[in-house]
Amino acid sequence: NAGVTQTPKFRILKIGQSMTLQCAQDMNHNYMYWYRQDPGMGLKLIYYSVGAGITDKGEVPNGYNVSRSTTEDFPLRLELAAPSQTSVYFCASSHEPDTQYFGPGTRLTVL
Amino acid sequence: LAKTTQPISMDSYEGQEVNITCSHNNIATNDYITWYQQFPSQGPRFIIQGYKTKVTNEVASLFIPADRKSSTLSLPRVSLSDTAVYYCLVGGFVSGYNKLIFGAGTRLAVHP
Image (cartoon, rainbow over all chains, first blue to last red; front, side):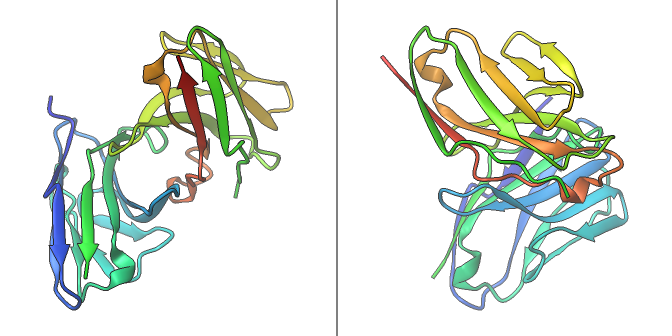
C-alpha cells in the first residue's frame, strides 16, 4: 500500500492564481481531511469528508474548496491565491474519525 | 470542545525515559485520547490511543487517571531519532471528527 499520497510536493503561486492540490489514498478509508500547518504551529482543519459525495467545512475553510467524487481521491482547490495561504498542506485519511494517516505534505508559497 | 494543554518544549538525553503530560479538563465521556508524532517536513504519525487506565504498544505507553482530565505519554529509553513534536488530541465519534484540534504540541529535543 502506498498509503496517502499528495502532489505536488512544492509549488509557488502568484497572487490571484488558482491550483488544485491532489490527495489519494489506497486504504479504502471513508474519512479524509485537509489541514494546513503554518511555521511553528499545529495543524488546522480546512475541510473533511466522511465518504464519496459528502464534504463539510473545518476550522479554516475560507479560500478553499473540495470535492469527493470517489473514495480514493480528495482534491483541494485554491481559488485566487493569497499570501495568507502560504503554508504546508497535509491530507489525511482514516477508517475511524480519530486515528488518521497523513500524507507527506505540499509546501505552497504564494508571492 | 475539549481543549488540550501541553508543555511547549522538553529536553532529554539518550537512554532516558520521557513523560509528556497533557491536560484536558473538559474531556467528554465518549472522547478518546490520541497522541501523534511529527518530524520536520513530514506529516504527523499516530503513536498511541487510549480511553482509560494504561495502554502500551511497541513505541510508547499512555497513562490515563480515573478522572481522565489528563494523560501522560511515556517514551522509554529515548534516542536521538525521537526528537520531534508530539501532539495530544481529544475527540471521537460523538464529539465530532471536525472538532479534533491539533495544538502547538510539545517539542522534544533528545541530546547525546
